[in-house]
Image (cartoon, rainbow, N blue to C red; front, side, top):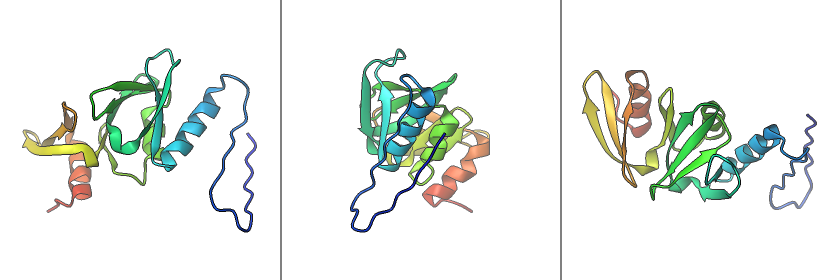
Length: 151
């Protein structure tokens, strides 16, 4: 892989070109990571990866692991398929309002409507667009810290 950074006086915006062989999954993942830096996420309508959508992060409620890819749930209830693994998405979403809630899921805290304590030091999050998710015991402290509720 060859990476170049060129900085020009007077340049107003960042321009990135990823050049690869057709169908190179690494290149697709790199491009998707760059899109999340711009506040957007690219995913596919189906697992076949034919029709692609780019959605603002504000429209994403949660992202769940699904083998070697991820399922992206939007606030309108739509489920999209991302070719990236959950860990890759977590890394690219590091400076956003997404937080890990379990080994299998990330949640956009901006789209959490309700938070309820559950048995065993867990939390139940109600998500915009419907649905709920459990925050496991090992991630509950991190979620509480991110929302400003710590002891």
